[in-house]
Length: 190
Image (tube, rainbow, N blue to C red; front, top):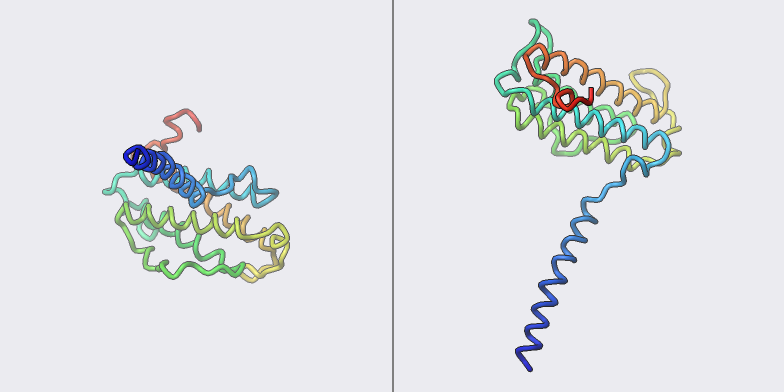
């Protein structure tokens, strides 16, 4: 009978513990989908998801040896465009009172290692995601100065979205010039 109790206890642990860990993992990684975030913040998060997917997949598709390529002297290289995006994703939320994490270093703009550049991009997009998720709808109407101009928190997020898309277009042109087709184009999406 003792063997039966030990067996049932072990069986319970074997069946129950994975459920506990799976539930904890879902809880720790669950983020509201953009569709569940109301109004402008939801639209911003949808744009963020789209541009992040495209920029990161393009950065991954470009070969390491092309990361120092630039179209002309004095113009940003491929890695400099990506690190500029990452830096701006950390810098621009300063206008609404959100500082970059202590782990962020402006020296990233000099990085040319593909893996490090991609990690910086991913971290910066996650930073922006948290910025948007931590704002309330009422926060969006707060006034702020942005490069000397009057705007609102919403205006800052709008500028951030425009900035990312501007450099996505630049990155597409750089990639195509170097014989790299954007991964989503290969799938027939664009």
